Image (cartoon, rainbow, N blue to C red; front, side, top):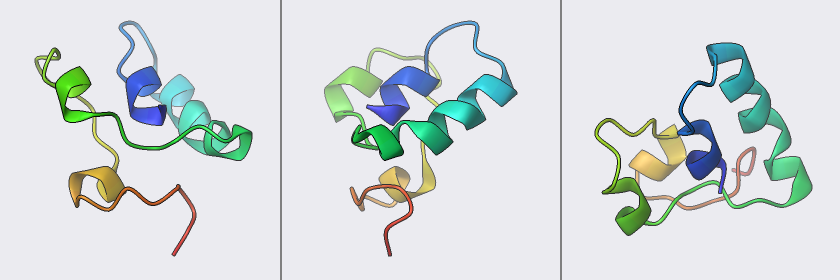
Length: 60
């Protein structure tokens, strides 16, 4: 998922932004499952996932 990738250790802000832009275009789902996020101390969340709306990025 996009959230899974942007939570990889060592990514720069620029790299995270690039993944957020390109991964949905390649068909990756945006939101990680809660159990995957539970393993992280401070997970980076996408706004649409935080709101509980698991729509693909860029979709209304």
